Image (tube, rainbow over all chains, first blue to last red):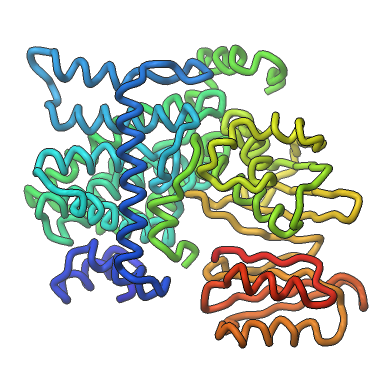
Length: 297
Length: 220
């Protein structure tokens, strides 16, 4: 059991008639020399932290210390329950509000699970908890979903990158969106290759996304990119389940993401020097937040 | 493969807001603390690249000091670490460097007290994963794929044998080993990548041998 790319992962799963989650659990057990019970329990604890972050984010409406984020998760949930007609639909808005909730908790220095990073921590909880609710799946199915996303993330991290400073937001929110899309495909009963297609379709729609946080804070636009990442993951999963295929294979999409990240100027890679951070409003907010010194840039 | 385990991807459990700038920073700080073996009196942290540009927004400063106070990535005391360090009488100084580092998230930590000092350079490569690239002036070339034992010791005969014997007793195989020193008879560094995880008990056994200054394990 050893894969280095998404193609190898799918090949292993399909030739041995296993789910992607099972391939990941077996590889983890072999490489780390740990029992599957032990590994499953650790992933279960991560799932619980995610659930707690969702609950906290949906019940609080206070702003973060900087004033840039907070309260939107609750606002979206309220709208979902009370609006007579929803444009994007209940499932998408559930995923979006939960992703927002966890991302808001992160901005407030609360406890979250980095998936694959803290900047992208809302997307997996948002999509996996919503898919489980929709398909009436148990806790173990959600844990399996996390292993699927871990397998896709493992391929991205080892063949490209997962940090905004190295590859921009496409490497963080983009990776998480691909990971989430693959996970919910398996949870919905899709095949390993459909999971891979979903990951490719999701990541393609995140290519080129820059990391330009206002005042350098993981809040704006990060929280809303988590929200939209969750929405893209759900729709990408539906496309893959419908039989839509990516023209470019998943591993090549990952390669393209890495190359685009290398070509991205430093100003757009988590330095708060370009993009939204450098807009007049972005700069003015930065001065308000760090009124003491940071005026020389 | 830089990322070995699924929990590098789905994890760590951490205090927000950034895995590279908060959790990774806490881990770099904690590695320095673990090597130093005690609470330092003086802390000087030089930040480079994205760390230098955005450390306050990400709580990188708070997390590095939290790590130096031995806090894990999910320790709820991290947000108050600067205050706690101040109350403990620790002098903390931050330097924002304009120098362009090889990796955008780089921190140099110099810690000391009356009985000694230690300097490490750490990088945070994403998702909370970190690498130590320099220790007390020794450049480290580590794969980052295996548990790595770092032993700072007096350059004298028997030191390598002592460590190798303890590893053998615990049935731990060495995959790669590097020994470096600056001058004969002074400080030397062993960096040892192992095939099996290294226990705290084993680290303690090494510490008790003569001529061992500090011992820690990375990527365990």
